[in-house]
Length: 222
Image 1 (cartoon, one colour):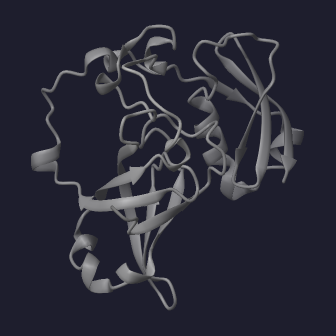
Image 2: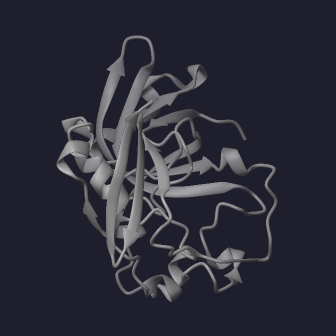
């Protein structure tokens, strides 16, 4: 298989990327097709769909190996289940699947048709293997059982002091808050004194978590 496109996202590092698509609605991306596929005819009719499926490659994990069991974050990172019962990035074939919102289609003069997306859960530069429309009548099964994923992710209260909030551009504040509220920490770590750091766009954000509240302690421009 070959990549038909790449996505340019707000997450330059793996740490902090939402664990599922749609959890951070403000996480936006531009999908740019590779030159052989930069033809508007290839996406004719796609504008009529509000959401699309992206089939993509865990490009940073290609040689990372895999195991028959993994420890999903939803279960606290300590309980093992089968790899095929999860969406772990460490798989025999490192393929990801995400449903994202199609905000608009731009006909760029040099890049061809560019898809503007939101609710993304991918690393900047992720290769896209295929794109398919999300069809509610076929893809949504309300009565489906959710297995262990019926246990909800914890959502944190986010506190950013005023002096640090001023360092975050207005256009990025909602993205930062939504991303941090999803608790980016490894689920098996809970030391309230530990300082974590993640990068969103060109901001390095350091934080601590205690009693369900994430407190930002530093914001630096990269």
